Image (tube, rainbow, N blue to C red; front, side):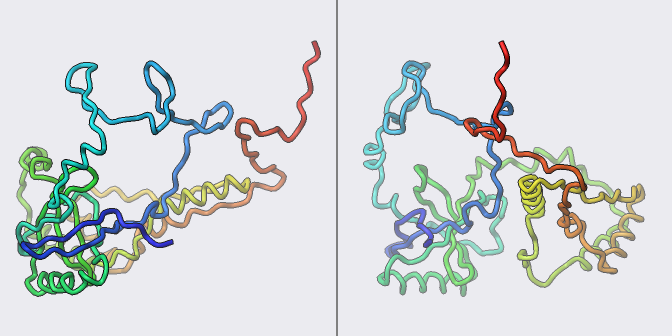
Length: 305
């Protein structure tokens, strides 16, 4: 199934406007497992309904948006009125400035990323010109765009042959690091300790930031748990290895360096080996509790009056 664009508009640099579409850089779900809430008594699904204090449950087409300007008093704002507020500039990613790529602070990233691709052949040439210009200049662009009903500050940068747009937090939304300085006071660092930690860093360093080897171990173990329970098996817990308590920092650093240099397996790799074993011989598999409305396997006998 082809991906669906999240936004359509223009990438605007001065008088140059490039028609583009924005696709989310993350896949929906991402392999995550969603657990549903059930009623403990009958295992029926818990449902959430939209209700009105006066008329009870209402359908989606009966719901409007409003702003509470005074206690219990609202002004209704219709979608058509919101659309009228949008100008042509609001339908564009307006690039305001370019910054050196090494001057950007990742702290401002909000966690979302979008691939921008040209919409149709007409914008392909201008798209490539802007992309190549940023690459050769080693610059990122900062701009603004109206998206999802609000104006957002964005970073626009080249990545893997495409232009990527990343919404940012405004400066007013970032907590100052000075607020936490008292909890992390500066202390004297011994030269030997510094040398050991630098040795540990170098021994653990890689040439490239390749994250493909990292797996969601918790989701893998949760999947095994669910599959084991569905098939009536018992999940055997992975034996935990208690870490040796080392009080002295120098000893901890030395042992850490030795462990890395010897190529000891990472704890996450061992944790991924959760094993589901069949239930013990002669022990019946666990029965799944029926949901509400499911007929029991056996006919219940009527109570004698």
